[in-house]
Image 1 (cartoon, rainbow, N blue to C red):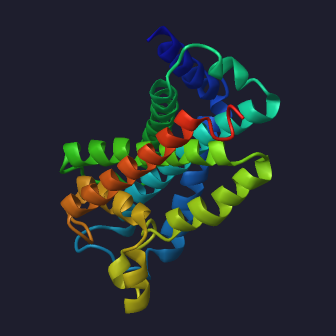
Image 2: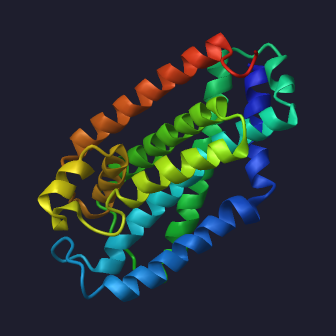
Length: 251
């Protein structure tokens, strides 16, 4: 277990040492989103009864920031190690592929939670959403970040260059997060887009997380948790198979 703890410590230290870039920058970005969208859309977007638009927006921005940064942590660490060649120093020690995967995912979850907490604290200046279900909120925060951390591991294994990783982020992660109900309730969408949104797994992460605040959601939180859990299991299994075979890492 010494190798596992060392790798986990290295991954935690990696993002904390550059916290201006990895923590402060996404917090400021989320704050700008809140200031602009709450000002522009507050009078035009209908959300849950009795919930102001600014308060509605905060959980979505918190969760979006957590997901994006969890993905960025594991994927950027792996691609940098592959390109600079220092991945060999991670592969040579007696660390199992399960420990390797677990260390990267836990570090990704840690960064996601730190960023999410920072966004929540800063946005409380504008509105303080009620928290009605702590357990659901924490469960979706951890499991959602774990899903994106595992997806980051998968992207980091597959990509050989920074532009491949950027394509993964720009053409998959960004559309999934922005079209997941961060800025609106999907029930305000036309029927065709409402149906399409229900195939987006990120929608279930944000909708379940928002249920933890307001006790209201577009779909059942149990269904959302089932979808998110299945995504995590499927991604984890795929990553572990690739790591066991050394795909694009040992060959």
